[in-house]
Length: 167
Image (cartoon, helix red, strand yellow):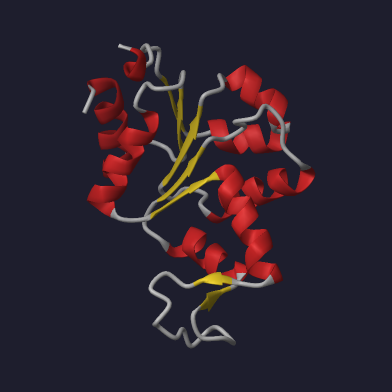
């Protein structure tokens, strides 16, 4: 793990750094790879921003298959189906949450912004890694000031490497 990523992570793990961790940089610089390594170590959940918002819509409309849908969850009305409250429980209670591809298309809907703000509120002061290809200024144009205030109040790492896939 590169020191410019490991050092801030060590501070966060020991409580001397502030959450959330925002990792920004160009495509192919290992941002997602790093986050998945952290998830493998500490456990948690991974979503892309758009996929999480889409899952919430589908979960409310018809439910989404329960991971390992042979299991019946006592909190669901139907065996093997997740509703949006289950996705929010993941966000609230997992030890670590990773949200990737923030602002990936350069624009968001009001609903997407509200859902990202809710994630930030639920995870306040708790382990949350946010990943974007956009710099802070461009990300600020996609999300409003109150969301950016929450996103940038923690630890921000800017990666300036080149796309590893192009080498």
